[in-house]
Image 1 (cartoon, helix red, strand yellow):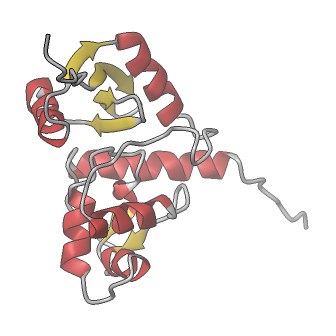
Image 2 (spheres, rainbow, N blue to C red):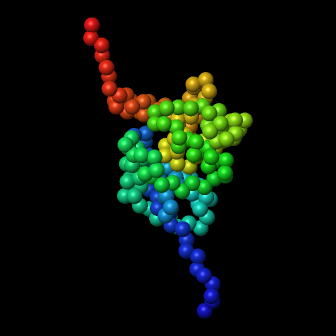
Image 3 (tube, rainbow, N blue to C red):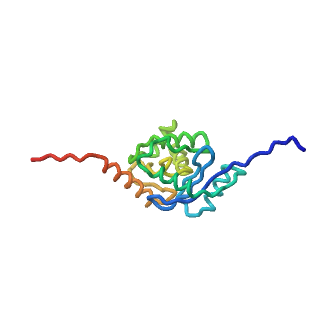
Length: 183
């Protein structure tokens, strides 16, 4: 018998779930969530995961996916409650970390993201990293807009991005006490 060590395939659970913004495809490794996408083609989404995690074994787990989605789209969920397993370049990770610092219901420009990632001149590169975010909404790339205040493209569609921002704004406004002055 050979002394070769068998390499165990990395197991990735995946599934689909409903969100306030439509169906999502979710995948997670033993370390954390590696995909949350509004993409309509599950095969394309899972092929992307295969590229990032070569040799992985996929196991469908709808219960786990629904649990992640419930937590992901609950405004009460605190940062860090959902563990992520992100694979990207050093700069992409800096950008994604900067996105995590954008408060719920707020927006920033691509330039502000580049500055937060440590390179004021890398606005286009920051925009590219925002666009390549594998865990939409969990790393809130929808909160990045153009410097002039206009919405920019979004992987899940510009209308979905608009609905996300409006939803966050409405949730915040429900939690803000209204004070009225009486004459």
